[in-house]
Image (cartoon, protein in one colour):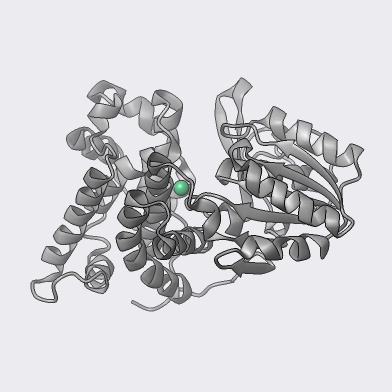
Length: 384
Ligand SMILES: [Fe+2]
């Protein structure tokens, strides 16, 4: 397949490696000395280390606790107000995807007037950011969303029961500091859910319509590693090589999805969250085998090549290779104790139309194949 043309856009700097947190103060102070640090409560030790190191360098640090759930408009508004009041020069998000998105959105909102709700995509009040965001530094402590590498922040607007992005080319992190050692204390369930999110993002961006030679190369380097590393990190949180491979998978998944787009699993996953309260990673895991099944013809050659890269048998035709790959994904989910039967998550045939009405058009548009009207509902009902 001829490679699509592409435009590349990344965080300005990416610092990756075990104990990379040590380099975070230098990256942050490059952006400013008045620092607003938003950190997940469960990452207290890392946040304290970072805060102490910044203070030793003479920084003025205001620390705030992350919302402890997916960020909402009110959380972003509150944090942006703090940044304005303290005349913060740089916003740091240390935590999982939710904290990173909340900090990224607050950095974007702070120099602008209004509420985060004014900047969410696709509403009647959507505005563009008039002023450039404050510099933002991402320090992920889970290996999943890849939000450290993207230019959008997903924010829930509770009053409207909406989950949308604030997105702007200027919202890329000034620096993404990716330290896999910060993930060693994650419990197995979080390792599984966040890891399956990264894996799903890699799979979907690999076969997405916007895939290009560069995203292909990244997916091909990350997916085989992630396949092996996820069960190893799940079984032994202290496995340094596995944690490093998963942090790499998450980072590359963010880069790839930002360039190539996603597909049907990410299209439907938010609806599983809204209707059944299923977390994003668990929803992605449940939908990944389905997404591969419905795209197996459209993406056959790439999926078969990927299976061979993952150590799958060389013999057999492409159909056999894709079938083996999908079986391996199902095995992995089973091993991690992740539910892949949508019916077990509460989805009924009668609920399928409502579920699809809430699906994200963006992700469905980049799926490798289109669906005729009613086709996706039929396929999903069959897969329950
Ligand atoms: Fe995701």
